[in-house]
Image 1 (cartoon, rainbow, N blue to C red):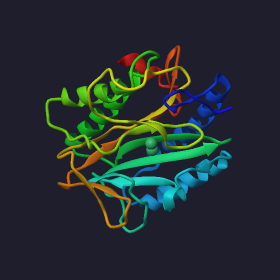
Image 2 (image 1 turned 120 degrees about the vertical axis):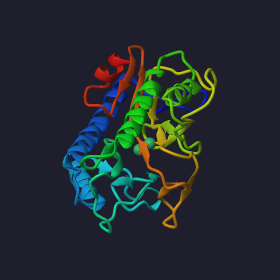
Image 3 (image 1 turned 90 degrees about the vertical axis):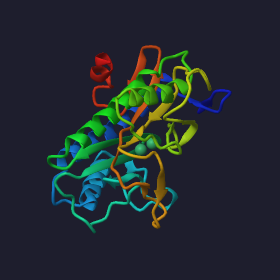
Image 4 (image 1 turned 30 degrees about the vertical axis):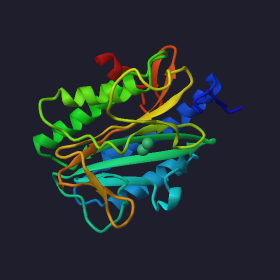
Amino acid sequence: MFKKNRHGIQIKSAEQLEKMRAAGLVVGRTLELLRRSVEPGMTPLDLDVIAEKAIRDEGAIPSFKGYQGFPATICASVNDEVVHGIPTNVRKLREGDLISIDCGAILDGWHGDSAVTVGVGEVDPELTELMRVTEESMWRGIAALEVGRRLSDIGHEIEKFVRSQGRRFGIPQEYGGHGIGTEMHMDPWIANHGKPGKGPVLEAGMCLAIEPMVNLGTDRTRVLADDWTVVTMDGKPSAHFEHSVAVTHNGPWVLTALDGGKERLAQL
Ligand code: MG
Ligand code: MG
C-alpha cells in the first residue's frame, strides 16, 4: 500500500496524491493566514497560537509539535535565525524584522510542509531582495521536478539562480529539502546546491519538499544552546521558503500552494 522505488523513495498513487494535496492545502491556508497576521508588536508565540488553531480547526494535526521534542506548531526564525527557531513571547516583532515561518500538518495520515519569510512592516530593500532571491530560487528548483530529470538538478537550479544575482549570498550546505508523504522527513535528502545530472531519476508520484535557505552573508551557520535554533555565523539575516511538491506527468504540482503553483510556474 505504501509503494517505494528501488531508491527507497515513496511513490504515491493518484488517490494518495489527492490526500497529499488535502494536507498541503491545510498548510497552505495556515501559512497564508500567518503571512497576513504578521505585524509589529506581535510575538512569534502569538503566531504559533494562530497556527495551531487553524490546523486543528481543519481536523489536522500540527506535525512539528513533539517532533524530536520540538515544543511548538511552527518554527519561527527571526532575522539572523535561519531555521528551526522556537516561537516564544520573549521578544516582540519590530518594524524591519524578517520572520521565517515553517509549518507542517498531518491530515488523514499524510503530511504537508511549507515555509515563507515575511517582512515585519516596512523592511530594508536589501532584505526585500533577499526574500525575492530566496523565493525565486525555490520556484527554479520546483520547476526542475519533471519526470525523467535527476534529483541533483533541483539543487543545481537553486544554486545557479542564487549565484546569478550579482552579489554573494550564502547557501547553507548542511540543510536541504526532503521526501515527504506518510512521514514528514523521508528519503531522499535534497541539497540546495551542486552539480546537475546526478542521483535518482524523478518519477511521477514522488513528493518532495523543496526548501532553499539563503543568507545575506556567509553560508556558515551554528546551532544555539536550545539545540534547535540555527543562526548565521556572521549575524546577518537569512530567508527560507518551502513548498511540498508532487512530480506528475503534467509537471510539478505544488501541493502547499493554493493554486497548485500554476501562476508562479507559468512566469518562469
Ligand atoms: Mg518545513
Ligand atoms: Mg521541510
